[in-house]
Length: 556
Image 1: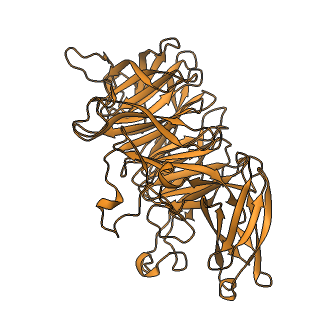
Image 2 (image 1 turned 45 degrees about the horizontal axis):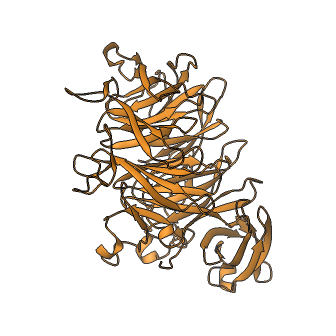
């Protein structure tokens, strides 16, 4: 197993928003799993791609989304594709409870192959999985629901809670032919998003090409679905109730209280809220936010929602965060639990780096580049073409992924406001970012419920990356005094043995540290005379050869 630089992103601790915790990409082939037979760095020119060292598994070609099972025992990766490309199915991994390391257990695909032409028989076979997009669990973890845009379908599987293996039970398709095994449904054209209600009574599916969200009744004993109705952008000639701004509906988000369903659309640049009747499952349009809403219409303008690719709700249900692909934005929305109403509450947007911030000014700095930010947006580093966003289980951290980067933000639980805390890049351009592997190409991400791990998919590398909780640099500012600064480090509670290692200002001598589990402490670091004159310093922490944590600390 080759020694490599580990990628680290940071997030707030369970104990205090003032302290920090980090996720570090695991070393060697434990840090990512890549599709068997997929291209490696050895097949690229040396300057075209970073070194990639991953373990191998089937069923990951064109990895699209990732979900951790409710019992935290397994991780499921949904892989997309077309008629002859991609895995078109679901890969199943056992998850080590202590480290988060993934071990391949099974896969189920449209062809029974693992994603390579002629690999039939290496995976289980199931119907209606072409261009699989997303997956959702029943609350008890016994059933899994998968939507596939190419098949225009939703499929359901029983799950063996011991092995994680999936067995298909049924499917419903928008279009079907003679002799098909799936039942017939409607408004499922381009099925792209799925969510299960907290009470387990209903399943909701977004049809991207139908411009609709479909309601299904769910049988808790068998997992079977029965279509009840839909809401669409056009009303679908009477098949559905009439909605607004649902064209291109992609992701479906369910509030934890079960009261509301929210749908995002990159095509419309919208977030639409629908109130849910817990008895019937019926949805009633309530809220509509649009990147460019017409005056006098039913929607409210929020410019940063252009290209609203994906979203997530905070565990407390008070905020909804939306990744905007086209303008490199991360939008914060507040939610009124009583009514389901949404309101814009802030925006982060990619900003051009300064000459001081980049690793190589000759290659990565352009003095003529001046990113024009949207109204109300605050600059964020490395927030490039975000496609997905998630909130950690403790509700104190938000992560976004897209392009070549993974970004991390602390969340103010009172206001929902975000403050950038860290970043990781596959192709390292910023001094303050850590280097990552196989985090690129419009991926998705999932945080484990126990706070130990973060999993990130990459369609480009056909992979899933594994990050584990580690030490964090909690200080964002420090005062220079007599050639030194003091910074605070914190160790997460999930690190039972505590955190120990070395920490330094880049270019200076390192100091040793040891921090107990769930605690924090300040350390003194030497700063060179030249560094002390700068506006900021890059602080780097190393934990037992396991992680390289970086943070830009402002100097006073």
